[in-house]
Length: 157
Length: 72
Image (cartoon, rainbow over all chains, first blue to last red):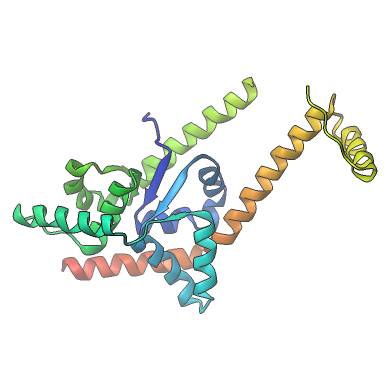
């Protein structure tokens, strides 16, 4: 079992999974124990679920802002994205813009990135730039173990 | 040990709660109240941002289709 860091971020797939109703208990635990960072692509996917339902996207965005840390398109993020992609292109590695933004958002926030297992290969080129990734299913297993350990600690105290 | 002051109404309410909880001390009552408050706050926060399962599944299918198109 790995030691989970304090800061966690999610790719769009994992963020939609972790915020869906069937995972509400897990989300509550994550909110209690971790700082959650949300990249713009993950944020967009989330808001899309609301926009399709014709809900008030502005209000939904405010709700998210009050609960998660949204990773802004800051100078640091944009510069790092360009620099990293520049090196990758020189090495003939071509990545999706969305993957680039999700990966570099996790790098600049120094957070563990939770990704859909099927897509994990796309994130591998970023590991040498400091990206730490974990598959979504593996993450849930780790959270389960972590929650059990926390419960044991509470009993001891 | 620290002492806190409460008004008469709160004092009566907290005494009733101590009996209901079968708590041994007021520290225990306050600890329980704090625990419940955290739990309620987390539930409220999560409820604010939770998305319905079918909406998440639908947008995930869109993401997967977009990815397929980009890679085809």
